[in-house]
Length: 196
Image (cartoon, rainbow, N blue to C red; front, side, top):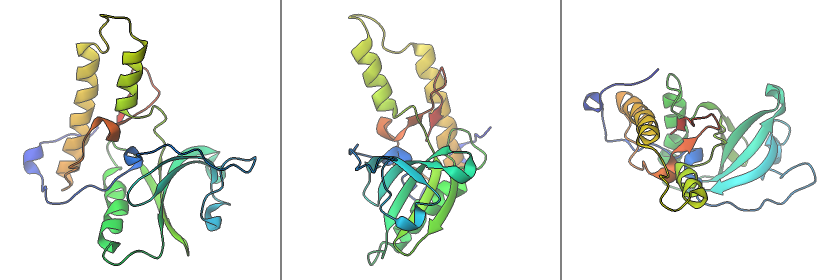
């Protein structure tokens, strides 16, 4: 379990985006076996299922990893060559999840980073429950008029997990600076667990 006091932290660094920062859902082109990754060098290691979204720095793909018993992973692809002045930001995009994902169940696990001739790939844990925004919107759409969308106990449970994740970031010298419902992912467990 992770936790700690934000008072002990450095807050001058910006946490990189993870699978949580996927902004758009695009329909992928398929080849009958799923969606092809834009990097052929990764096709033998990962079988793309669909594009999850596109962030400012790269695209995020849902993939199966045959070498890991078809484990579902999110693969964030940063195109190369890197634009001038973006190397520090891209390094942070990879370094932060790798540093933070160990030792806290409320942080998306970063498994590995791979460099190919055309991309930098960050392989991360899949968070199949979607964003907290989508979770709340679904609850709102399916609730009856006057029905409580989320109980106080459930909100407290989710918020406590979020505090644990943010405290873990702070203890390791990182400030997220973009904590919002869209960037908080969930598992499919009942009740769902948070993945920041």
